[in-house]
Structures are given as C-alpha cells and as structure tokens.
Amino acid sequence: LAVLILFNKAQAQNYDESKVPAYTLPEVLASADGTVVDNKAAWEKKRRPEVLRLFENNVYGQMPQGYDSIAFTLTNDVVNAMDGQAHLKEVTITVWRKNKSADINLVLFVPTKPQKPVPAFLLINNRDKSNTDPSRTTKSAFWPAEMVIDSGYAVAAFHVSDAAPDNKDTYQEGALQLYPEQEGADNGTKAIGAWAWAASRVMDYFQEDKDIDARRVAVVGHSRGGKAALWAGAQDQRFAMVYSNCSGNTGAALSRRRFGETVKVINDQFPHWFADNYKKYNENEAALPVDQHMLLSLIAPRPVYVTSATEDLWADPKGSYLSLLHAQKAYKLYRRHSALTPEPPAVNSPIINSYLGYHNREGAHDLTKYDWANFIQFANYHASGQH
Ligand code: GTR
Image (tube, rainbow, N blue to C red; front, side):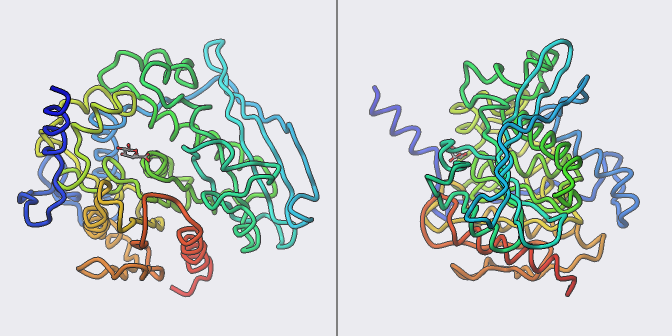
C-alpha cells in the first residue's frame, strides 16, 4: 500500500515540459467590475487593493492589523564586530496586544565605514539559527554577512520560529497568539503570514534606528522564507526591494502551470502555511482568482529580484520566470524599465539592470554566495540612479 501511495504521489508531479497542460492566467489589470486599469492612479486606487484582498482571502490569510505597543531592547551591542568593520546590534522586538506579547529577535550588523544611514538587507531565516550566528563563529553562505558589510550595506536577520514555529501543531505558539481572531477564520493567517508580519515589525524597528535608511530596506527570503518575503513586500510598501530565492509554489512560480510542486501537495504537506480557504484550490488551480504574477505585480514599482536553480525543478524555474514576465504589466504603468527577455536567460546569466531582475543559478535548491553577489549588484544598480 505504501508503495502504491508513493507511486500515486510521484505521478501527481509533472517534470515534463511537453506535458504541461494549457492554462489561462487571470488578467492582472482587469478589475472585478470588468474595467481594465491603464494608469497607475487607477491601479493604486482600484485594482491593487482588490488584488491584495484576493490574496488575503484566498491564499495567505488576512494580515494581522495593529498592536497596543512595541518595544525595542538592545540585548547585545558590539561596536567593533567583524574586525572593526561592523557594529553588531542584537535587538529584541516585543509586540503587545490584548495583554499578550511576542518577541522577535533581530541580529543586525551595520557597516562602520560608509556614512550613515545605510540601506539594509533583511533575511527571513527559515534554516537553522546557526546560519545567522551573531558571534560569527559559524559563517554560512546562506547569510554571508561579511560580504554584505564589505559592499556597504547593513545586514539583518530574524528566525521564522520567533514569529510562528514551522510546525502544523505549534505554529500558533508565536505571534499569532496576539491575534486569536485569526484562528478558525477561513481567511485567517497562518505561519507564512506571521513571518511576513514579523518582517514588518522589523521595519518598525528600522524606522527608529538612526543607522538604517528605512526607505532603502530590502526583504530577502529563500524557499518558504521567499514566499514570506514576497508576501511581506506585497502588503508592506515600506520595503523598497524584494528578493525571492527559489520560492517556488505559492512564491514566485505560477500555480496554474502544472510543473513541480502543486497547490494540493503544498497544502497537504504544510497545512499550517496558508489560509484554510486556499485548500479549496487543491487540484483546482484554475478556480483561483489570482496567480502568482499578481503577487509580483503588487510589488510594483519597487524593484523585485527572483531566482531559481537548475536542479530545483520542484520550484519550477520556468514558471517563476514567466510569472515575472507577466508582472511587467504593472511595472509598465509606472514606466519602469524591464530588461526581461521573452525566454528565460541562460543559466548563470543574471538580468540585473532592470526593475524586474532574475537569475537561474546552476545547482541545487539553496541560497548561496552567488545569489547574494547578484542581490548586491541589483541593489547597487538601483542605488546608482543610472536607469
Ligand atoms: C519544500 C516545499 C517547498 C519549499 C521548500 C523549502 O518541502 O515543498 O515549497 O518551501 O520546502 O522551504 O525549502
């Protein structure tokens, strides 16, 4: 029986380009009343809020709103970290609502050299906490803090488990305790929404830290963290840039394109990630009122960078690129330059000089120095004002 089940599961996944069935994407600029928006004012006033609500109600759940108070406690302060190259600050962000509190622990390195305030990269860390070791005893390519500091950017991270444990039985034991009304609601937020909420609380902190240029903060995430980074950037317009690394299904990849992971597979394996309403679309993606190109469109006109990896077919590299291509319509409303080509670029050939950036790295499902080096190039391009 087990063999049979495994066989059936394997059959549900398609990795054959010639077997991708035809699909029709919802029109990002077409409003519910049938009018097609053709200018940024109408997009911002009418269609953008509509798309945001559709994602909240059908996919990620409602973004928890408001809190009673927030406090930032510096728990470790090392002025001469990284051989004097950086100032380390560890900050506990405590949020209170209805007599309950949640803590988000932030690790932040600020470069010593350039003039402050500096722009920053914030990683939503979904891997082991050692990847963002503040003592730098462990140095990981997943968060190459020294390299980012050398490039003149601050680099920060928090761990997803502070916001919501990545577990179907315990995901409510973090920040969601502050928002009990979310539980049981069909459009209630779960873990991915809680991680995005936490990224916004870090942004609340950045707005108070004089070392950080809060108007130039990029949110970065890998895989499930990449799904959260996109959702954070889509709903919180204070994020100036968004980086989605190998985010795959319900991240950058188109859901209707049947290749790799599907909505049913992700909902069955991770019932604690998305709203209960999302389960309605198991094996029924065509009924979704959105697809993921519309999530990327919500980031317009801010720069967005999507990556894939050649061995990471589960996350559908081509479907991720196509999603980005279809998001161009929203960027065009703002006359933002796109260097995307109709076909995905060659492996290891990043598209940097563009509001919509992309690379397909050779190798496995991971976040590496190669990815970060291109993230920095993309940020440099957008800081240079050459475009
Ligand atoms: C997988 C999941 C993907 C992706 C990945 C990860 O098991 O199916 O959607 O999120 O985990 O986070 O590494």
